Length: 149
Image (cartoon, rainbow, N blue to C red; front, side, top):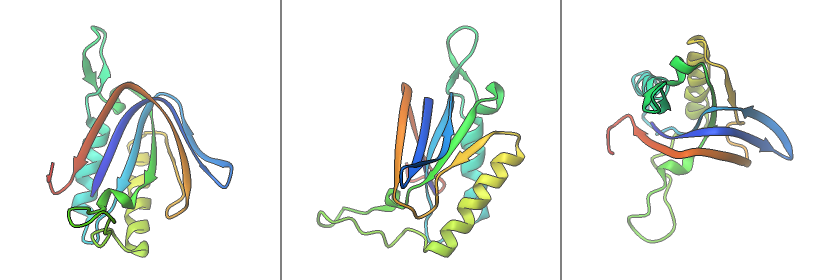
């Protein structure tokens, strides 16, 4: 499982000209699910996302997490995080999860983060979405449950 995590001042996701998810200050997560991901991968990414110390403390040092600050999270599915272009120029997505498996883990991600008391908004799995991001910093962190980076 992969996640591109961005600290944002605000972010929203639109499907067919309708806003389906929107947050103010918090984290925007583009979530890629691999074909063989498990609950272990899911739990690893959730722990990292919610405990990332990327928000300023009283001294202006990035030392606080989403949970510490009570900020919001917007999650958007992003199968293209598994695009492989090592051979040729057209991405191969063979590592990305099939729709049924991916949506199951995506929905579990949302529920588990909500169960931590975090306000979660989200996109529509598998839809063509427009994502507006007002990056704060910018601060962008890459996560991979297989620790490939």
